[in-house]
Image 1 (tube, rainbow, N blue to C red):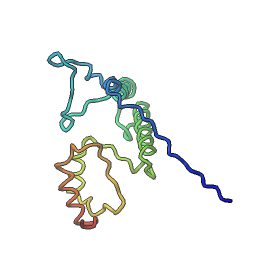
Image 2: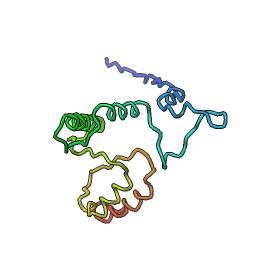
Image 3: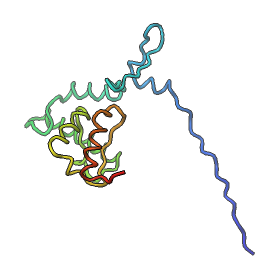
Image 4: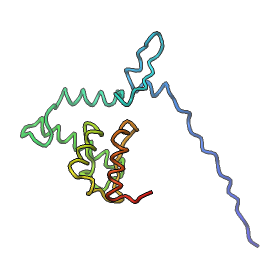
Length: 156
């Protein structure tokens, strides 16, 4: 005699999105403008900074402000160690094979423009990824992706 087990999927419970908690992470959102809580939508021009990032910058500037990979003194060593530690955390978070594959830049549009102009496009290979957290770089991503597609990406 055969028995069939019936498995009933259990509903997953996900806590509702907590806007108040998220706002606590951004000190600037404690402001009121025209008598109402600040709501900021101009992320393409300037993204607001969470308190964790503000604290890291304050720690850096207050304890070991120095150029990374170039100084021959304690502050430079400490700054380099912190930088490389951050790169390793990002590597682990995005599951990159090596931390040297994680590159921090000051601005995506400028980086992509310089990289494409310098001839970096032909070095792009199938399977490589460019991580960009938002669509604020559309003016460069659209032409850049067209440029890249002419070299290595299949036509769609």
